[in-house]
Length: 146
Image (tube, rainbow, N blue to C red; front, side, top):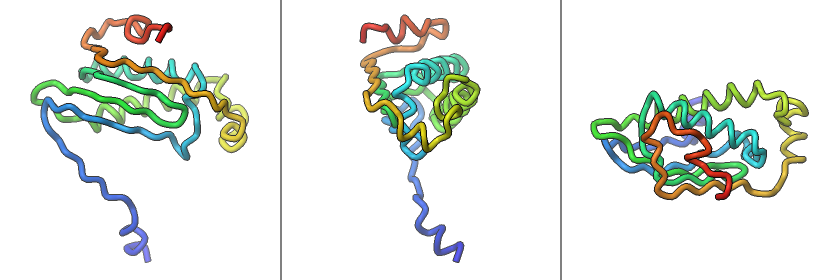
């Protein structure tokens, strides 16, 4: 029975090209629109920059929508380890987000917050942004007037 169920789980085929350019779509758990909250977007940006300092890459473009993120990265030469970067970004964001007392998902529970979530999109597009400066401030990378 378990073998039969396991056969329906998505089996990803991943390509690892050192120095490659990658397109990612990352979806929130149960498609909860957590990024409709500006605090969540700011925490995600902080996590992205923090992990980028330790594991550099070029962020060519990013779009943050309420329940998912699209991004394009260029990795350094001789480096194809994007799974570690995403694991660290997601773990860092999740830890910070669950500690946030203004987080409606912690305060009211997942289902109630999902139903009450703001339907407006928070979109950040940064075409050609280069986060190669590990000391770049968030405001310099993501100006408020975008």
